[in-house]
Length: 322
Image (cartoon, rainbow, N blue to C red; front, side, top):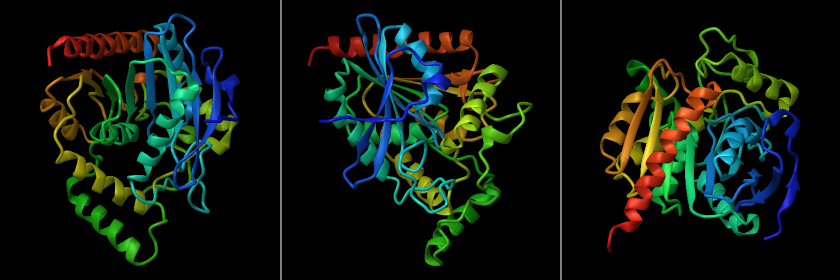
C-alpha cells in the first residue's frame, strides 16, 4: 500500500521525534488521516489509539511520548467527520456520521495500512470516549489485538432519565423531516475546549494539559468540531444499545473511569466491566472525562497499571494449553 503524506502539526503536538501523518482512504472513498510515532527502543508492541468525538491525531502527541518512552509504537486516527479527515456535511463543525458502522470502515482502513507502516506486534487497543464505543464494536468484530485499554468509554451517553425518550424521538423524527443534520439540543458550532473556562471544565483537572489542548485548536481552527448532529446522536444511542446486548470479548481489558465523569454514562461502564471475564475497572477519584489528559504523574500511574494488566493477562492467556 502506498501511504500519501498528510499535514502534521508537529510544532503543537508535543510528540516524540520521527512522527508523521498519512492519508488513508476507506472502502467508501472517505479520506481519513492517521498519525504514526515509532519507538526509539526495541519495540515491545504497538498501540492503536481510537480517539473520542471532536478529537484528532495531535491531541495524542503527549500520550504518544509516554508510550514510546515505554517501548511501544503508536498509531492514532482522525475518524471521518473530524480532525483533518473528510467532513461529511456542508457545516463542517457538525459532528456527523451516516451510520455508526461507517466508523468500522475507518478501522479496516487503518488495519490495512499497518503492514506498510511496519507496525510491530503484538497490538493493543486504547480507546477513549467515542473511540471506546468504536473499539468495543471492533473487538466484537475480531480486531487483532492482545488486550484493550479504555478511558471513559462511550458505552452509554449521559442523558437525564426524563430527557432520554425525547432524545430517541428527536433523532427518529429528524430523519423523517429531513432535519437530521441539525445540531443536537444545547449544542452548536462552538468548540468546547476552545471556549470553555478551565474552572469546572468536564475534561481534565490539569490546567497545563487543558491549555495545551486549547492552544492546538485555536492555532488550527480546522481541527475544531462543535456539537453532534441529531442523526449522530440517534446512531450513537442505537449503537450503545446494540453493544450492551453483546457478550464481552475474550481478551484482557482494563477501563479507567473518572469518579466525576459528566459526559458518558458511568452505569453502563460499571455494568460492562462487571461482566468482562478478563476485565478490570479502575475508578480515578476526582477524575473527569479525560483521565489520560491529566498531569504526568497520574498518566504514568495509569499507564503502568494498564500495561501490567493487559500484558500480564495476555501472556497468561497465551500460556494456557489449547
